[in-house]
Image 1: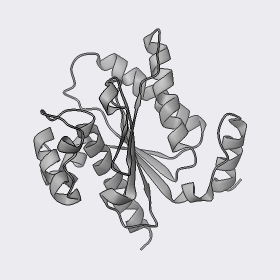
Image 2: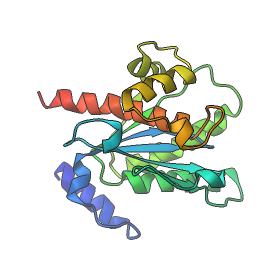
Image 3: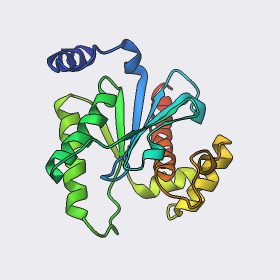
Image 4: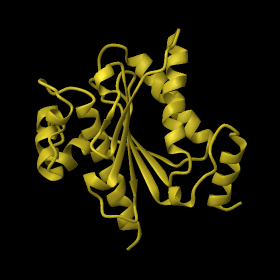
Length: 209
Protein backbone atom coordinates (compact mmCIF):
# COMPACT_ATOMS: atom_id res chain seq x y z
CA UNK A 1 0.00 0.00 0.00
CA UNK A 2 1.38 3.42 -0.94
CA UNK A 3 2.13 6.06 1.72
CA UNK A 4 -0.73 8.32 0.55
CA UNK A 5 -3.19 5.43 0.35
CA UNK A 6 -2.25 4.43 3.90
CA UNK A 7 -3.04 7.95 5.09
CA UNK A 8 -6.36 7.95 3.21
CA UNK A 9 -7.32 4.58 4.65
CA UNK A 10 -6.43 5.62 8.19
CA UNK A 11 -8.32 8.90 7.93
CA UNK A 12 -11.42 7.28 6.42
CA UNK A 13 -11.58 4.95 9.41
CA UNK A 14 -11.90 8.02 11.65
CA UNK A 15 -15.51 8.78 10.77
CA UNK A 16 -15.58 12.00 12.80
CA UNK A 17 -12.79 13.53 10.70
CA UNK A 18 -13.16 15.58 7.53
CA UNK A 19 -11.75 14.00 4.34
CA UNK A 20 -8.05 14.64 3.81
CA UNK A 21 -7.29 17.44 1.38
CA UNK A 22 -4.34 16.81 -0.94
CA UNK A 23 -2.96 20.14 0.23
CA UNK A 24 -2.19 18.53 3.57
CA UNK A 25 0.47 16.29 2.04
CA UNK A 26 2.56 19.44 1.62
CA UNK A 27 1.91 20.55 5.19
CA UNK A 28 4.36 20.03 8.03
CA UNK A 29 3.59 20.60 11.69
CA UNK A 30 5.75 21.71 14.60
CA UNK A 31 4.36 21.24 18.10
CA UNK A 32 5.41 22.79 21.38
CA UNK A 33 3.44 20.34 23.48
CA UNK A 34 2.47 20.80 27.11
CA UNK A 35 -0.36 20.36 29.58
CA UNK A 36 -0.85 24.10 30.11
CA UNK A 37 -0.28 25.82 26.76
CA UNK A 38 0.24 23.51 23.79
CA UNK A 39 0.89 25.28 20.50
CA UNK A 40 0.90 24.00 16.94
CA UNK A 41 2.53 25.65 13.93
CA UNK A 42 1.46 24.53 10.45
CA UNK A 43 3.38 25.33 7.28
CA UNK A 44 2.83 24.55 3.58
CA UNK A 45 6.23 23.53 2.20
CA UNK A 46 5.36 24.86 -1.27
CA UNK A 47 5.78 28.35 0.15
CA UNK A 48 8.73 30.29 1.53
CA UNK A 49 9.19 29.67 5.22
CA UNK A 50 8.35 32.78 7.21
CA UNK A 51 6.01 33.84 10.00
CA UNK A 52 3.33 35.10 7.61
CA UNK A 53 3.14 31.71 5.88
CA UNK A 54 2.65 29.80 9.13
CA UNK A 55 -0.62 29.21 10.96
CA UNK A 56 -0.62 28.84 14.73
CA UNK A 57 -3.13 27.20 17.05
CA UNK A 58 -2.93 26.99 20.84
CA UNK A 59 -4.98 26.07 23.89
CA UNK A 60 -5.26 28.32 26.92
CA UNK A 61 -7.01 28.74 30.26
CA UNK A 62 -7.01 32.54 29.89
CA UNK A 63 -10.08 34.04 28.21
CA UNK A 64 -8.27 37.02 26.69
CA UNK A 65 -6.05 34.67 24.71
CA UNK A 66 -8.97 32.61 23.37
CA UNK A 67 -9.15 34.78 20.31
CA UNK A 68 -7.82 35.42 16.81
CA UNK A 69 -4.60 37.42 16.56
CA UNK A 70 -3.31 38.85 13.29
CA UNK A 71 -4.40 36.60 10.44
CA UNK A 72 -2.66 33.41 11.48
CA UNK A 73 -2.88 32.86 15.24
CA UNK A 74 -5.89 31.19 16.86
CA UNK A 75 -6.35 30.56 20.56
CA UNK A 76 -9.01 28.31 22.07
CA UNK A 77 -10.00 27.57 25.65
CA UNK A 78 -9.18 24.14 27.04
CA UNK A 79 -12.16 21.81 27.11
CA UNK A 80 -13.45 20.85 30.55
CA UNK A 81 -12.04 17.71 32.13
CA UNK A 82 -12.61 15.69 35.31
CA UNK A 83 -9.25 13.94 35.59
CA UNK A 84 -5.76 14.00 34.12
CA UNK A 85 -6.49 11.10 31.79
CA UNK A 86 -9.42 12.96 30.25
CA UNK A 87 -7.29 16.09 30.06
CA UNK A 88 -4.48 14.31 28.20
CA UNK A 89 -6.96 12.67 25.87
CA UNK A 90 -8.69 15.95 24.96
CA UNK A 91 -5.40 17.78 24.33
CA UNK A 92 -4.07 14.99 22.14
CA UNK A 93 -7.36 14.80 20.20
CA UNK A 94 -7.20 18.55 19.54
CA UNK A 95 -3.64 18.20 18.30
CA UNK A 96 -4.33 15.10 16.22
CA UNK A 97 -7.24 16.75 14.43
CA UNK A 98 -4.85 19.44 13.22
CA UNK A 99 -2.18 16.93 12.24
CA UNK A 100 -4.30 14.47 10.25
CA UNK A 101 -2.89 14.21 6.73
CA UNK A 102 0.32 16.15 7.42
CA UNK A 103 3.51 15.07 5.68
CA UNK A 104 5.37 15.04 8.99
CA UNK A 105 5.09 16.26 12.55
CA UNK A 106 7.92 17.39 14.82
CA UNK A 107 7.79 17.56 18.60
CA UNK A 108 10.28 19.19 20.92
CA UNK A 109 11.93 16.52 23.04
CA UNK A 110 12.08 16.38 26.82
CA UNK A 111 14.32 18.80 28.70
CA UNK A 112 16.38 16.58 31.00
CA UNK A 113 16.51 19.25 33.69
CA UNK A 114 12.71 19.38 33.92
CA UNK A 115 11.21 19.46 37.39
CA UNK A 116 7.72 19.16 38.82
CA UNK A 117 5.12 16.82 37.34
CA UNK A 118 7.57 15.12 34.98
CA UNK A 119 5.64 11.84 34.87
CA UNK A 120 2.46 13.68 33.95
CA UNK A 121 4.37 15.46 31.18
CA UNK A 122 5.58 12.11 29.84
CA UNK A 123 2.09 10.61 29.97
CA UNK A 124 0.66 13.62 28.16
CA UNK A 125 3.20 13.45 25.34
CA UNK A 126 3.02 9.66 25.18
CA UNK A 127 -0.70 9.70 24.41
CA UNK A 128 -0.16 12.10 21.51
CA UNK A 129 2.72 10.03 20.16
CA UNK A 130 0.54 6.91 20.31
CA UNK A 131 -2.30 8.60 18.41
CA UNK A 132 0.09 9.90 15.75
CA UNK A 133 1.48 6.38 15.38
CA UNK A 134 -1.98 4.80 15.11
CA UNK A 135 -2.85 7.30 12.37
CA UNK A 136 0.40 6.61 10.46
CA UNK A 137 1.61 10.21 10.78
CA UNK A 138 5.42 10.46 10.55
CA UNK A 139 6.95 11.93 13.70
CA UNK A 140 10.37 13.33 14.51
CA UNK A 141 11.60 14.57 17.89
CA UNK A 142 13.92 17.56 18.14
CA UNK A 143 16.21 18.30 21.09
CA UNK A 144 15.36 21.52 22.97
CA UNK A 145 18.94 22.76 22.56
CA UNK A 146 18.60 22.51 18.78
CA UNK A 147 15.42 24.60 18.83
CA UNK A 148 17.19 27.29 20.86
CA UNK A 149 20.24 27.17 18.60
CA UNK A 150 18.38 27.66 15.33
CA UNK A 151 16.70 30.72 16.85
CA UNK A 152 19.60 32.34 18.64
CA UNK A 153 22.78 30.51 17.69
CA UNK A 154 23.11 29.25 21.27
CA UNK A 155 21.77 25.95 22.57
CA UNK A 156 21.26 27.31 26.08
CA UNK A 157 19.37 30.51 25.20
CA UNK A 158 16.58 31.66 27.51
CA UNK A 159 13.03 32.67 26.60
CA UNK A 160 13.89 36.37 26.33
CA UNK A 161 16.67 35.67 23.84
CA UNK A 162 14.28 33.50 21.83
CA UNK A 163 11.74 36.31 21.81
CA UNK A 164 14.30 38.92 20.73
CA UNK A 165 15.52 36.78 17.82
CA UNK A 166 11.97 35.95 16.75
CA UNK A 167 10.96 39.61 16.86
CA UNK A 168 13.93 40.47 14.66
CA UNK A 169 13.26 37.62 12.20
CA UNK A 170 9.49 37.91 11.96
CA UNK A 171 9.23 41.68 12.47
CA UNK A 172 6.32 41.00 14.82
CA UNK A 173 6.04 41.97 18.51
CA UNK A 174 3.79 39.22 19.84
CA UNK A 175 4.16 40.46 23.38
CA UNK A 176 2.48 43.75 22.48
CA UNK A 177 -0.05 42.16 20.15
CA UNK A 178 -1.20 39.82 22.93
CA UNK A 179 -1.06 42.57 25.58
CA UNK A 180 1.56 40.97 27.80
CA UNK A 181 3.49 42.99 30.34
CA UNK A 182 5.75 40.07 31.18
CA UNK A 183 6.87 37.55 28.57
CA UNK A 184 5.00 34.27 29.08
CA UNK A 185 2.81 31.74 27.30
CA UNK A 186 1.23 31.59 24.81
CA UNK A 187 3.80 33.96 23.21
CA UNK A 188 6.76 31.78 24.18
CA UNK A 189 4.95 28.67 22.93
CA UNK A 190 4.16 30.27 19.57
CA UNK A 191 7.84 31.15 19.18
CA UNK A 192 8.99 27.65 20.14
CA UNK A 193 6.57 26.02 17.69
CA UNK A 194 7.75 28.38 14.95
CA UNK A 195 11.38 27.31 15.35
CA UNK A 196 10.49 23.62 15.69
CA UNK A 197 8.70 23.94 12.36
CA UNK A 198 11.61 25.87 10.85
CA UNK A 199 13.98 22.98 11.62
CA UNK A 200 11.60 20.55 9.92
CA UNK A 201 11.07 22.90 6.96
CA UNK A 202 14.81 23.16 6.37
CA UNK A 203 15.15 19.37 6.57
CA UNK A 204 12.36 18.94 4.00
CA UNK A 205 13.99 21.51 1.71
CA UNK A 206 17.27 19.61 1.84
CA UNK A 207 15.45 16.40 0.85
CA UNK A 208 14.53 18.02 -2.48
CA UNK A 209 18.14 18.52 -3.54
